[in-house]
Length: 245
Length: 390
Image (cartoon, rainbow over all chains, first blue to last red; front, top):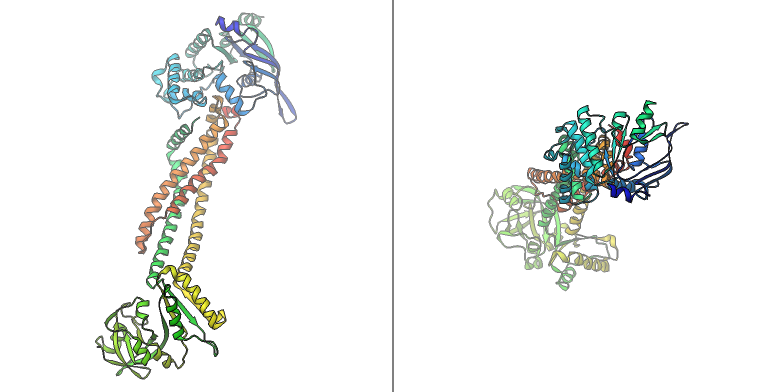
């Protein structure tokens, strides 16, 4: 972890420079992101918090290369993603990003192994290696014995672990978790957050998007959005103080 | 993503909703089966017609001449012409046919009396039960000899006639020299209702000296066209007018049969082809529904790095697989139906290779063609919107 940090000191893994995302709804202009600048180093564990409508989903889509900003620059690992289109963005998602969704988003007609293999499949990795890599990450999340099961045969916690395994399978630079505990009970939420912490301690960069402050408190750094602007960016400890104030 | 993977996915998806897949395929099955059955049956009918007409002699050329006062054909010249071109012509016979009253005592009927040359029997592939056929000497001497068919024997002689018996044709006495073998169950107006006499006598009976009909036989079917050309040149040199003679052969008839059945095949095949088109639209419809239903899946796949091409392939191959499986089932059913219906109609009908290849090609093509639009729609989906859909 230390080694990685040193290497990336000058060039952040994620560098968002003055990002605007503007939608037009009839005659009204909606500024979902209104001039966001944010740098995230490799190995960080960042929570992006905000109420619904704060623009956190929009910034997540941009960080996750699902969308591009209307204006501004997004440099991901030295690569300008902000001007990319369709298939180029797909490649960035495939190689760099591991998504964890609130509703797990496992494909119901594919078994767990096939679900976890998906990013590897689209990366063009051969069948044998695909299975081997997928089994490795399933083992890491502790549900390797369930590989043959279909999502509807798994509990919510197991499904979310499956989704994490899928996010990890392609060995991405960033784990992007969108309200990962939203559909889980408190016990499994706790387990999941502990697991994310462990992944971070192993050197993974994790970005957590949530509206839940107690979940955000698990991260080392908190970025708070309000009306498309960053209103707080700092260590979790400082954020708590600000909240109290 | 590899194509084999896309096939695996397509197969899973088809099995995942069996009833829907089957109903989608049904259109293709019916379309392909009807194309194959119709084309197979028409081919069977064509073969049947051709073989029937072939028995009548495909190596024959019939010439019909309308004589004028100054221009007419001469029998001896026609014989000479055939002999001069003996590498093409096996023989020639005049053909002077008319209907006369024929009597044996008090028994009387009207029958076709054909004035022929001595080669008539060979040229027409006929044979005798007993006796002899009309010979050159009979023609030369205008001998009143006749060969009669079995219908005449039945009607005028109550079934029992002997060589040497005599009959009256238009009042003239003819001696029976031979009996033609039964050809068509001894029915009236059939080839068994015939009396053959020397053409020299027939010309006289008709009261004219002109012979207007000749039948040429070529040594082989392949010479028919060449023979027709030679005859055309020869007759034109005599008659100086194309309208005064006609040359017909079985090949023309066979060509006509082929053209007509070919047309029939196009029309019926086209109608059946419409059902293939409808089947294609059915596939497109189902694929469009499938894309809408699977929007979320597409979003997930895209978020994991699926390119446009990957999504495209997935849906195109699914559509192509459905229609190709439908096509194969259709080919099997069509083949069975062709044989079964052929048996029922009493013709030998088999699915033609062409129709099978056509049907298979069309069904696979339709799958790809009609699958393209929905697949393109899927591939173009915005991943954010797709992920958000339920």
